[in-house]
Length: 302
Image (cartoon, rainbow, N blue to C red; front, side, top):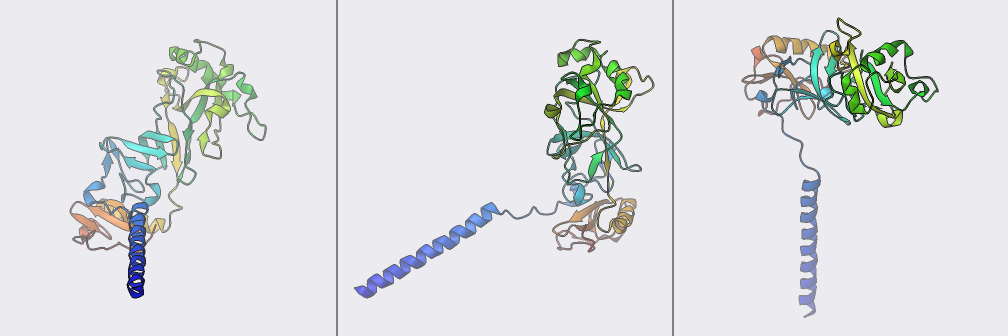
């Protein structure tokens, strides 16, 4: 009888150990999902909406440079290039590859034709983007804006641009911010140069302002805010990428062969995405079944 109970207790113990082992495997599988597989070649496009897409940008995962994804990607409908940060997503209206400037138009940014309260605008410090040549104008602030100062105590409003506030206060939509037309401009501030806080935000609540506008150009009639070009210019830096010059040369050859530059995880090596497959160089030297063969491309790891 003693042998039976010993055998039974040992078997029961082993059974519980087996259950514990299986539970740990299942838990690990749930909490640590496998990385997504590389996208098929057709998912990388050289255009999103009306915008031509070139390196370092891409339309999605595996396209362009991994450093710029998911900051820049194409919408699921394929008609709008999107810039995404911790603060929100913004439509991209233009890209100047020669000057490395990307322009976005936040949907809740005020213009002369549409003014409203705005959430914070923000950039991710870890991304290769920084504020470019555009003027931020803070609206419906607690007066007087001349008292707005930085942490060092310096005024943040540039009085030499006060005429821009005067022009914006002629817009009928100013009423949407609770201000009458032609109201005193002591609630307006041209924040130049604009600085983001430690989180990368233009913190409107801390600045005690309801909204903001950003101006790229004053157009052909500088006193008419209806003719201004609105948007936020962002400067991007790609030279800091590992092996940038080698990849740029390979990417140029890839694009000339009607390919799209991309990368192959997990090492993120260079890939030329072609219509009928992928290559480690260009579409003239296409290797069939590149993705399925497990090849990771040229070992440039960027």
